[in-house]
Structure formats: structure tokens, C-alpha cells
View 1 (cartoon, rainbow, N blue to C red):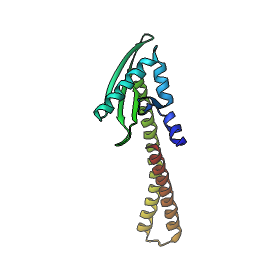
View 2: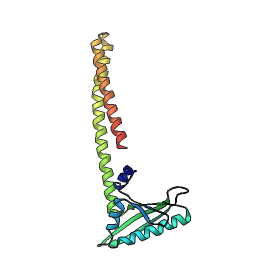
View 3: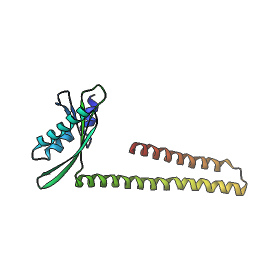
View 4: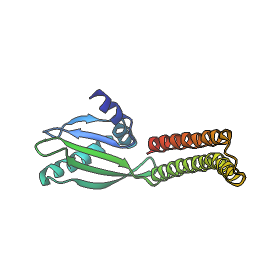
Amino acid sequence: MLDLFRVLDNICIGVLVYGDNLEIRYSNRTSSVLASKLETPGLLYDEIKELARQSRIQSAPKTRFLFFETHNQYLTYAVTAQSLDEGYKEIIVTVADETPAHRLERTLLKAETLTVVGQLAINALTEIRNPLTAALGFCQFITETGDKSLQFVSFISEELATIKHILDEFTRISTTYR
């Protein structure tokens, strides 16, 4: 369970868990950071607690956008509260910073990541094309000359093994990226 809390403490969304009496049983680091941006952090917690109460009463997820003005800036938080599961009295609440500047930062980070992945794909394509072209050229040479020499076949085999290795690495990297 300790590993789960470590993961929750390092995600970019605030997570709070409320117990039977709507007391906070767990609050991750991000929820504390989001609350600390406000002049009165208790205001955020009061709004969240009310949303959790409504979610429990209606037995349905509840989402609300909360707007705050603080330190001459406007903050927007998307707050969702819902029961963990049937039979559980705990309510889990997520808080996401939807402030335009924060959304722009997330969008730019995604765009940057996609650019890197695109460059990686282009480089991988080039690395695949080179040995493939060599293998195809030797195949064409063997076909045209009618030479049955095995030295060319071993070279083709090496080039095809290189292609396979590059594709395996690309697959591993793209799987990790997801």
C-alpha cells in the first residue's frame, strides 16, 4: 500500500479520500499545493467537503468547477467526488488545476513530447531503410547474376537482423511511452 501512496503523492492531480464522517483520511501532495495557492485554503476544502457530501447523498459522481481569485490571478479547479465502490463509505475526490496557464503548460508539454516521439520515429525509419535498401540491393544483384554464393546471403541475413533489432527497440520505447 505504501507504493500506492507514493504514486498518488507524485501525480499532477489532487487526490483526497473522505471517510464515514466526511473527515479527510488521505490527501496527496498535489491537493495541498493546490490549496496553498489560495489566500484561504480552508475555502477549497469546504467546497470539496460539500461536494463529497452531495455525492454520498445522491450516490453518484459529482463534478464542479471552482473559481477563485487570489494574489491578482484567477484559479480554476475541476473537482470530482464519487464513492469508491458499492458498500464503501469512503468518497474519493480529485482536484485538477484547470487554470488557463496550467492547461497551456500541459498542452505544451504534450506537444513537446509528441515532437520528440516524431523525431524518434523519423530517425528509426531512416535506420530501418538503410539496411533494408542494402538487403534488397543484394537480393537484386544475386537474382540478376544468377550467382548462388552464400556470402551474399549471410550479408542479407545480417542486415535483416539489424532491421529486426531496430524494430524491437522502437516497439519497446513506444510501449514505454504509452
